[in-house]
Image (cartoon, rainbow, N blue to C red; front, side, top):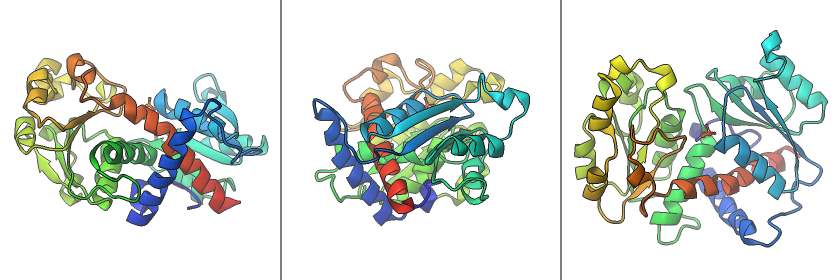
Length: 312
Ligand code: CP
């Protein structure tokens, strides 16, 4: 795998290979010195044109656990404000010694363009491109589902699991990547949300499609993944107001109590507490939200290891 650009590029075999590698790497975190020499001498650059907490920091932690050097670019405060392009920025960091570029960009397709344009000769990992894809998020979600719900996670897919993804599907690269990856791994996926947040292309996605959250809950999903309402891209009037949205699509305590006991609650973060998820649910014992964050580090170690191994 020279680049990691989209969950749709992953076969079942390659996804399970990445998840198994991540499982091996997760043991490193338990050591007194949580480091391996695997990427010593390699420089990873985080090229972030959009804000991030989890993805940027976990790529940094992943690279450091593999003994790589890390450089971080954030558009805010950079020469992007003077009009510098993605191409010039990427070539600049490569000239400074970047061996692997991890890129987050607001434009859908930006990571693929960087990987295939010939502008740089490094492996490229997509850390989120507009509403396009967020493959390492889908992989860390799959890792979390396997760890919690599959009796023998190593080597396994997600056969037999049903997963509901709820909320702002329209603006969510997390939903797009998860629908395809979880389906590739054998799970049955349903997207749930209002018409206004359900893009027409969902008709062609390998998933069920519901408008009613209570109907989804009555279907006894094994996992329910709540999505952030992307307030910066939505006029609340579109939703009939946030209170109405929360009443119809928020995971309240009552709704969580209606789920089977084994059902896990997921959220990619950042959360709008009391909008798409009640605080009491986010902080409850069935919430695996911080496990998702933890698994992000080992999944990103696996992604760095795989792209560098195929490049060098
Ligand atoms: N889930 C996720 O991508 O979070 P960040 O935007 O904080 O990286």
